Image 1: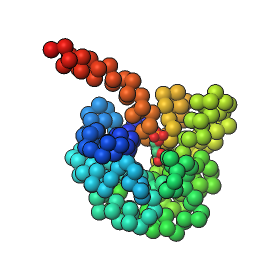
Image 2 (image 1 turned 180 degrees about the horizontal axis):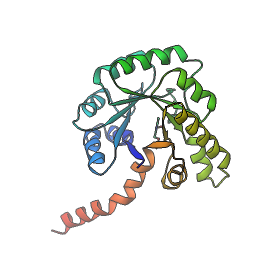
Image 3 (image 1 turned 120 degrees about the vertical axis):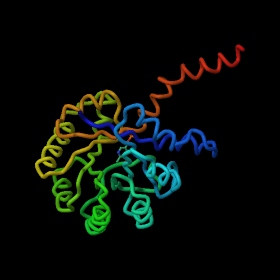
Length: 239
Ligand code: PXP
């Protein structure tokens, strides 16, 4: 069965909007696992716009929870990640002003830095992954970097599907990369912009074994969860 990693960054976004402690991403990490998620993904951004150092530290210290920490190659973040020891690390590109991670890493420009970072995490037995665009060239470079996994950026196919455009070329590109990577012994993951429809499409690619999904899960939970909360308040107000 394919694994589901739930990205809980936006629980922290919601908490930070009020500057208080609710909803707590640490409780959310336990909650998503108790509801069947295989792992928890958090992104410790350089501007700390959602997950903060203390959240990441507490989440990484939770018992029996597989934590996938997304980080850039910023040396301070890398050192902090090495200290708090997540189960997995996924290296992502990061621009301060972007709303979300817009594309995969530039592996060629950052080859030496990435190599050093991967070695550091491997020495600590932390599974390494690179967030890449669906390009065979990037899969080949990932092999040279000796990374354990790649996560294919699915933002483009997600946008095509959502706008009812032809996505077959992008689908085939992702499939080819996934097959290439698997043949190289690299584990393949997918993430970004996924919803029910795009996940159903991409799960047809056998080589993809893990999906990391955030925004849609948190957004859709509003609709799937609100009825219970409204009922609770109506009960309180009635008595
Ligand atoms: N995977 C990676 C590497 C990410 O950086 C993100 C967040 O951009 C996700 C998965 C989750 O994306 P989304 O929130 O769009 O589901």
